[in-house]
Image (cartoon, rainbow, N blue to C red; front, side):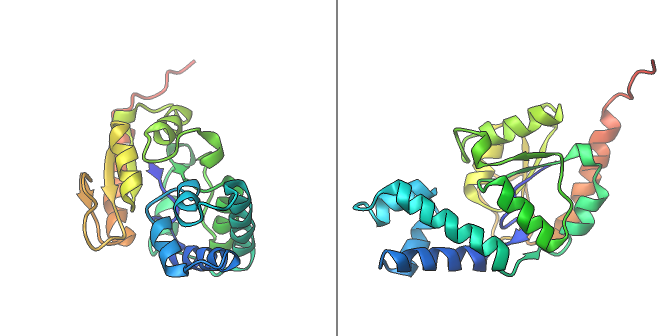
Length: 213
């Protein structure tokens, strides 16, 4: 089981908007326009589009500072069903695949009480982020799983594309309308919990028992 984080397990929409608004304020940019661009591009691409006259490295440093502050002071909530779902999965059967950084993910999970898996593939772990399949393929490799045996849970088009390109089953959650390409769509994570657990049990039965020594 391979899970995206923001928008899938943790509701961080308000936090992301607030961080980008503060970042836009530092550069005296229109906050609504900046956030609109940020929703569909990676940070460096956002900077190139909304602040082409600024040093992108300084822009990224400023953004990271605001994000780190938000992890400490912002209000976060796990989506309904997230705790129940993750607590029910064997620790070695699931991973997090995120475009964020591991220390922020751990901070958010600590704030919301969610368990942390042994495998976290973050932005620093790969050179190519979503929609490249690389992050999901790396997570599968670290879990010792074949791509075709993996279930990806996503909420965003770039993540869905990444999972599909990795040759995995992809289910979408937390969106009123299905993202193009998903194999199944659920309006909320809560609705998907029974089916995700059923998928996990089925995959567990398919695997041969370990040899006795």
